[in-house]
Length: 419
Image 1 (cartoon, one colour):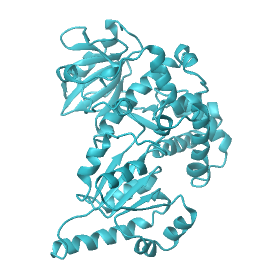
Image 2 (cartoon, rainbow, N blue to C red):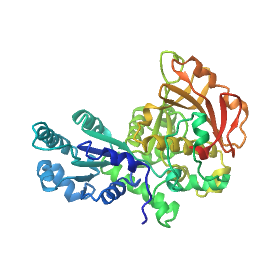
Image 3 (cartoon, rainbow, N blue to C red):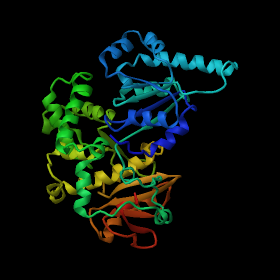
Image 4 (cartoon, rainbow, N blue to C red):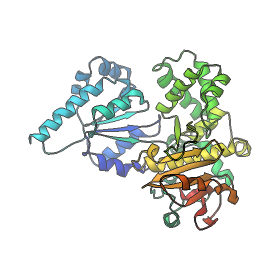
């Protein structure tokens, strides 16, 4: 399989030998290990690798973590690290000992000792942050972005209109070409092989159930869990209301919230937070659900071809999911925590803004429309941002228009190819 260059390469290289531990998280099969292997070759750096998907290695790491770490020479990639969380305390001891050598001049500088990758985070993520604060660099990797697929330069997506006008755009796509892309999704293997899309997602979801759900999480009613995931896929781009989906799947609210947490922790979904501060007391506090891969969402929602998808009632929600995902990747691929910058807004007066980007203390309101010429009422709620305690930037409507077009001095239609 041919390697597709990733935007994250530059950020990752800048972190090597500045952190003793680097962790890359993200869903299965998005290319975490492939990225690390490529960087090792590019830097001509010998990096050893083990995967805890291997049952024998996993048992060794769980039963005698100290011996496991002594057995494998650093620098070391440990794939699926979360399968042996006891390793963490021993890695901390090794890092502390390394720091002591640097402090007393026995070692010249910091070196990266461990590269940890994981498709499940759970409590391990919090443990790493607490135990190795200042010594671990954390990156989130998702599927391929459109710019990675097209080999186009990628910059952080900030909707400042002057910067957008200077930005290189991706290739213009007709509506059906875009929905072919949405239906295909973003997993690298689909762009480096000729695998059948439906079969790929069938196999992917089966692997997810086998490795991340059945063996690790001991879900008692697997059929209901599958129905729950499919029901969520049909609701991508909507607020999560536990009572509604629990009633549909015939589970209780507590179980629905627990299963949602599993999907979030395994990178299958992204939860977009509502924007909250002292000036928005009437704002809705529920999170919005976005599947992190549109192809998987389409498969789970039962769509088997892009033509039917584009003509369906689902087309607007999956279009929004595609756009939001591209923006999330723009942030995570540059080492930014998207959760600190991306929000949505809805209040009790039914005023809603699809997306807010808060960057450098400026908030940019964004609407997302599957239209080539959305009407001006698309920006009707942007004035809500005037009530926030942060400076308001220009507003944009991301849509299918061919060129940037002004509604007025502060608001613009912007083609999705500028993301």
